[in-house]
Length: 461
Image 1 (cartoon, rainbow, N blue to C red):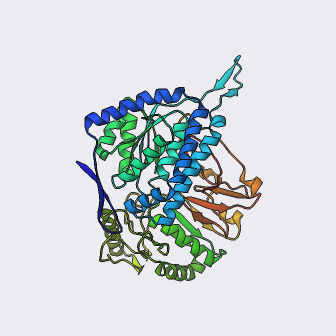
Image 2: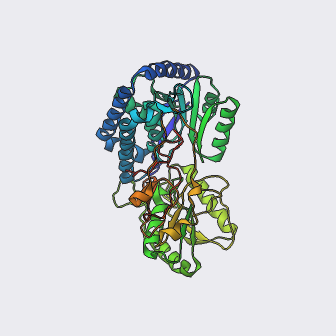
Image 3: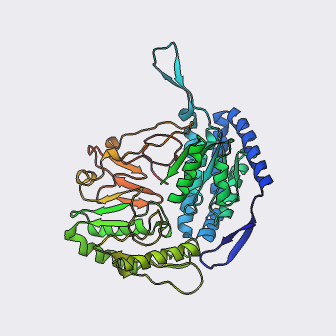
């Protein structure tokens, strides 16, 4: 049995990879358990040194890794370069802050001495998606490894080359053999692995069905699990031209294949016609083509199955009463391209029951991010109060770090109140300018991918 790496821009098979057999998988897990004990005994400074080397390695292999991402899942080369840079940034961030994050914390309990100590859990299994093949992994791996955990990566089946490349980044940086290993196995075997007593915790980013399966297995075996499960609101006083430009970029990020990409647009009635007209004009002007071409706005979808599913969603939406303003036809020729489409309806079509990030503008029953476009932050923040902050279960090794947006007037975060005429999305984060004194804060940043319960404002690279 093998895994095939297919170039979505051409439909051609790049390479076939052998899948791990049962004996090989057992060897990998045993090596992870043994190495994790060694890793936990090393000093934080030593582990941080290796993580800094990993950041250096990412920089040295920047173009190589970016080309690999583009070849395996079709994101534009420019966005792939930015993703490599962001992975280097997160490695440096945790390397530079690990000592303070992991230091003992003395607490007053009334006893002679009480303190909180952060210790690694053990071996952490990560089940990761293809849409950000490096970033989704490094945001978990950097804090987990520097805290003394070992990592096992079960990546998406269409990015096996990226999976193996990530393993090589950590091994080349000096981490002991077995500290971070890639598992080329089918999804069914990953669920079985969750139940293995040697796996201390599991983190997953994926669909609802995958989340249910992992949560069920983790719950039955008392394992810590971290699961990642977006309206774009335009108020009447918004800068329409700026809001349209932000809306288009928020929709097409990563060829539209981002969990936080804007999919549902809620526009004040008095500006709805003008917003829609300008939005459609901008979408029609986008260039779909070779992801390696600097002039390309949108590359192919990651797999043929994704394109087939998306086209079926469009067909069902139209049947349910939606009207197409742009796109909606299946292109001919090589590659898995699907030009953007826009639809609207007085009814509420639901093309998909579970999360399906694509290049279409559709309705989803829940979301990960919100953007509000308004000239006044105090007005814009009301629909997204600070109570939207989410808290994630901790993996020992990363603790709370909080700064006050009201002191600086500017905050960068993954989701939450994105309110002002200058709000925009960049990379896999939402950038929002918040006026001093507004008292509005974004929801919890997920840079640590569930590594800890915390609130932290940061600038995404």
